[in-house]
Image (tube, rainbow, N blue to C red; front, side, top):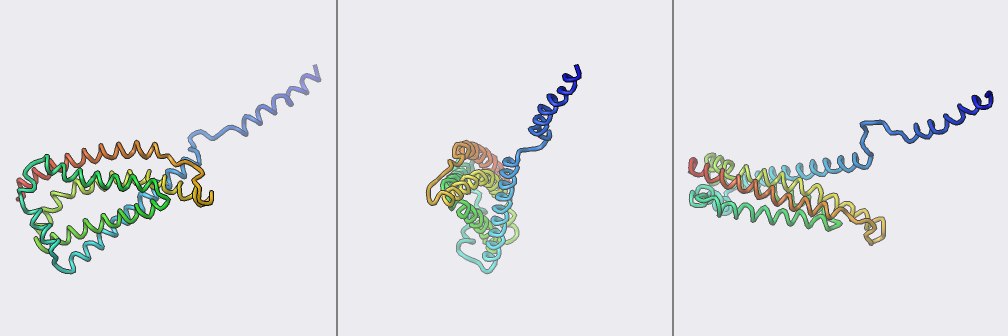
Length: 226
């Protein structure tokens, strides 16, 4: 009886210790998922900063003086014939969004995709800033207000969709780059290209919805402002 009592603590201690050593604190996320989420937010923040830096630089360059490009934009956005129907306006907006989505998608297959993505967002911001400044120089305050009312919604909507797609593309590009560095020029680990493809398809759908809504609102605003 005494031997059984003495052996009982030894029997119960081992399972309890091993169970406690394997036990995880509830409510805590895996370190790998935390790192992935943090990297995604950092990439989105960096791309957003590059976009607005490009936008400000485009405004500064466009305000330096009038140009034929700005005059052409001003005449385009003040011509009600360009915003008379939803269908052609939607095709124009979605065509531009489709090309941007393809560009962002392809960056996920390159080891230098992060660099290409940063260049894309900076260039995209610069073009939009140059457009706004060119319209303001040629068309004045009214031309700038009309420009923003007709294009701000689809431009910002497409920007957010491309930013969401770029986070996944950047993840694939970073994995390819690290794999090439660690494996001496050979891809060692396969990036999540299937997840990128799914996000690309969803991004196209979201961009189509944004462009459709932007085209409809553009026609309505043009009927009031032009």
